[in-house]
Length: 329
Image 1 (tube, helix red, strand yellow):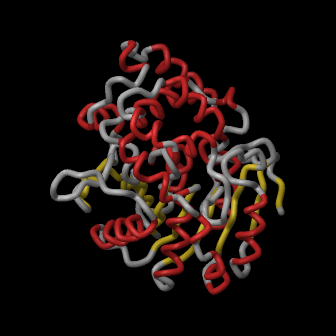
Image 2 (cartoon, one colour; image 1 turned 90 degrees about the vertical axis):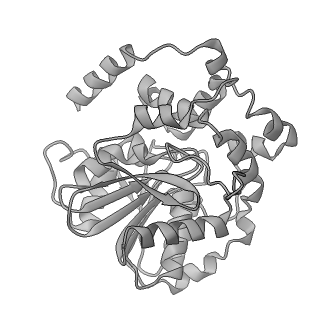
């Protein structure tokens, strides 16, 4: 852990300064620039529904597909994926309109609205394009909803299911997302959205905001300021009505399931963990005291301990004996 922290501080010291226009969100970061800065050694691209979809494919063995949440990216899984790829083939992707991928566009170049039916078509096409017929799904937040919905629709294609602070049950949208229900925000945000607001939102998803480093904050800001992303979010948010989602179908799932949750989640109520665990037959649940909405990013060593037990993955020296703060539910 020490080496990682030291490297993070060193990288932060080398962060280039942003212009005033960039900090205010008056300008956007081009897709080419995001690709240059944020692709990884295992990065690949596949054309789906009018977009070059960024994904990382590493390791070998049983397949694990990891799906991030709203306004996040595949980078949120970095530390966990580094461990899982020792024993599994791990595939992570940037959901549209986020990360390096950015918005889906029609043949006329119009930004597509990312509602649940569109995400269903997208993830089905992605799985088909990669030739994946069966996999374990690990999803966080919006990615959790996409994961369990896929399991319901493709019952023989999901080997195991891990939901981390998953969406699905009726809830009030977090203030930073709900802002986009305002017509004024939707119109103005593509032209002006200060990075201070984005940083505040990122800090809000951590149980302990002091854990966030400058490199991580910069990544979130630049992805949110990515070309076309804010306009796409403005079209997407008004469709996020979880009252229309049928969670009763979870009772019909026949798949080993694990529900992980941060007790200090300010975006999706921790009480929803029990709702998922009670509906999915045989599901196990773990609550993490002190952690927020993205525990796998905030405290990967704690989440890995439970993933190892659930997936049958061997322990490694880096992450061994660092699970003392977990509380089983």
